[in-house]
Amino acid sequence: MLALSNVGKTYPNGVRALDGVSLEIGPGEIVVVVGGSGCGKSTLLRLVSGLDQPTQGAIVLDGTPITAPHEKIGIVFQEPRLLPWLSVAHNVGFGLEDRPKAERSARVAMQLDRVGLNDKAAMWPRELSGGQAQRAALARALVTRPEVLLLDEPFSALDAFTRADLQDHLLDLWADFKPTLLVVTHDVDEAVVLADRIMVMRARPGRMFEEIEADLPRPRDRQSAFFDAVKRRVLTALDRSLDRAVAARGEDVRASAGAALWW
Amino acid sequence: MSAVEVTVAAERPVPARQAPPDRLARYARPALGLLLPVGAALVWEVVVRLGLSDGRLMPPPSRIFQEFADLARTGELQRHVVATLLRVAVGFGLGTAAGTLLGSISGYSGLARRLIDPTLQGLRAIPSIAWIPLFILWLGIFETSKVALIAVGVFFPVYLGVMAAILSVDRKIVEVGRVFRLSPPAMVRRILLPAVLPTYVVSLRAGLGLGWMFVIAAEFMGASEGLGYLLIDGQQLGKPAEIVAAILAFGVLGKATDALVAAAAAPFLRWEDVVTQS
Image 1 (cartoon, rainbow over the protein chains, first blue to last red):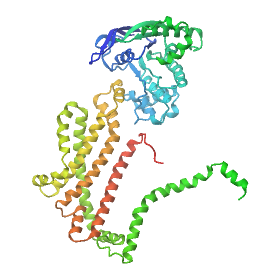
Image 2 (image 1 turned 135 degrees about the horizontal axis):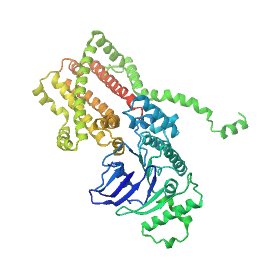
Image 3 (image 1 turned 45 degrees about the horizontal axis):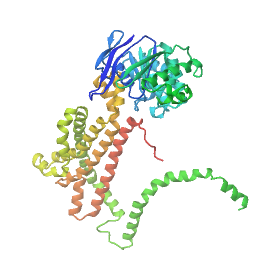
Image 4 (image 1 turned 30 degrees about the horizontal axis):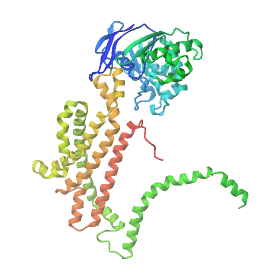
């Protein structure tokens, strides 16, 4: 159980990035946070990862307060952040340095196989495509079997086709050992594809604005009416979070579907 | 040639014919660079042979090679080369060690940087040759002052390179290390060291280049052996062939030691995303 209680973050320059965020995420749950740019969603993820400390409130994982990076919490960034001087296999095994060599190579090989990169093991990161590099980053985070995996707009730098492919792939990998996923995105489609629960944030200061259950069966059909209904609820909530007049948009869902990638 | 053949040739931009020029280019391009120096040497040789010039101030290639052969036969060349190489090696070693140590310290700690960097930058503004009189007073006219001068020359590029490299390590990569909870020594070994290596090698090569420059200045200030001594000796005895031979030896040694450093670093830098030369 990952619990955030009244978490806030004020940067030294006085910017209140996050204010009074409370959230409980059960084991194996997938929570997606969406919001306009500057709403503090990336700050939230950095706090949970332990890379930054909250200035108010507390983050607790299974009774342990999180104040620094924790072995049970993994993170995938927007960029792959592979170490250019290590082969793909060594990058994936980066967090397993303290394990015996045999165990390490077995687990790396298994994880590379799961992300479909076993033929790329000996390559340098620069030789991978954007999607392959992000898959390697995913493998690096998953190989240590974290209880909580944080993903910070993980697929936003990829083309639409690769992105949809990796979203399905992520759910497939999640099913392996069902970690808790906390995903930050500005892509409403991505949120509806992945989430059990979608949290909409509003900016200045960053707060939780609305919670939307997305209890659709998996795998989810991106064309289904249910999918569209959830998506519409998220878009409406996003609009209201920006204090925009919802009525002015009326029933023009087609336009909002086009705008969905903009968030 | 018939009209039909002409049309066919015009329609196809002949990819098949591109292979031979490529193969030619591979050998022709380096050869192109040799054309000027080798051509000039040959021309000069011919000019002197024809008696158009006596070649006294600028000896022709044959006389320079003769000088080389004579110096090598008497063992003079080896003695001078060894003396110069030793000075460069010791000075380069000391300068690199000091530059690496201080560069790492001021790159790693902001306090240390504020403390020592302004002083070092001030010292750097002094042309290193200006130290010679002081070094001679302090350290005597023998090896110590010479090695010290070379070490000073090597120190600054290495110091600056190491500090700049550490300061420019990508914060995002460092965060990867933090996420995996690396201890400070592990962070240095697994993240910082590999990240600064490419810049470090560049600064080592720059330092080595300066080391070769300063060994000449050091040997000008009174030496009984070394390639710099050979230069002075050639000047005082009016032997231009000896001077040119020493200059050529400097060129060959400088290039060879630089290639050695580059080759030693190459296995660790295979990951670098460099544009392969075409």
